Length: 534
Image 1: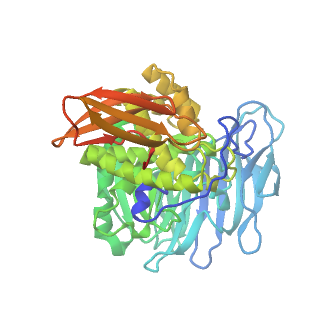
Image 2: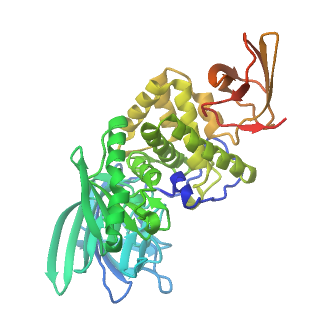
Image 3: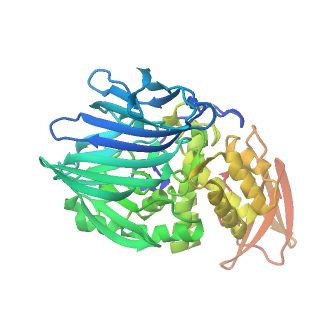
């Protein structure tokens, strides 16, 4: 989503408040105590006469414990926007419900039956979530744009990533539209009266933040199949050839992540030019890219890699609380870099990380806060340089700390454990500890839950075959503990020495038979720090 790879277009800077502590993440969403949604079937009717939609949502719920009242999110009509609920059914009978404060609160009938199906009939004009607008070429369009919690504007649902469910969209619209949506297309039928029904179904459980529809005039093509997964491009007809070319790299990216992380979870991978508030939105199996991503110049490879990485991290293995969104955004940021490293080499990794380093340092000056900040209560405010770039840098440092082979072993184990499920930062830490055999508590505590980064003042000198290096951490709030590499340059060749820094000051001596041309701190970009001038 909203990605570091977007920096060639724009960067989203969202203010954070002051530092919190590791415990008690402040995700304030009121979760249902027992009801667990297993599946949604959304029947939607769209038209060209107005922006009003009609909906019929079938919601299958399993009660894990007692059969208790539960709530669905839906924004109620206020003024021109919002939804009116006309009826709610349990099975084929009217259900007992109330619709207040943007919650449909349903009281189940007295029964021991743990699996039940509810139907909500509603209509109205969505203010957000479903973007009803015209494309840059003036064509009427409908695009789902739910992240983080905007599904409630048009889909009655549990609008929080902790409750994932299968999705089916049944879209009735004028027959001049092309329709793509989350899942595999299982029906396209002419209904008469110039109407068409198009149905898509996704059998993997998905969070509402990443379900979508795209309804407009499209040019579409099958780019290729990767391990039997169809990869397609859906672009505006005016951008047909440019879009097919720009989005074509998605097949290479998908193969890289399957080969290195694990199985892909969804029925397809569609890449869609769309009206979206973001540069890219990682909808499960149906990614939205901003309209001007299509140029025919193949300049969006990093963006595409970021959004496809999300299919594993954020979509399949999802954060259980909004405050741990780095498990989505930090991962997608770094795995886009890993993909680019695999194609273009280590210098590309370093180039991307150095761009990120500058943004992290600049951001900290205005927003001294940690990656996991439990003081944030609004999901829209969890996105920041911290959760993207600093989260990515944390993975880069973890990789260097435990080694490449162990890093990938841990990543694969983490994905296998939480595929189609939810995790917290502690879950990721536990699995990486098991993979590495190391206690990583201090590492995660200082990089995720402590604000800032080392600010290092250092000098070097050479005399009598001794290279003397003096380092000092200048930040006052915390003494960081980290390994650091020192590059000694002579006649164009570099030799790297490694040391651990666990105190505010450290002096080291390296025996050398030659005077260096230069000494470089962290020449391979493995440590997040700010170099302070003397």
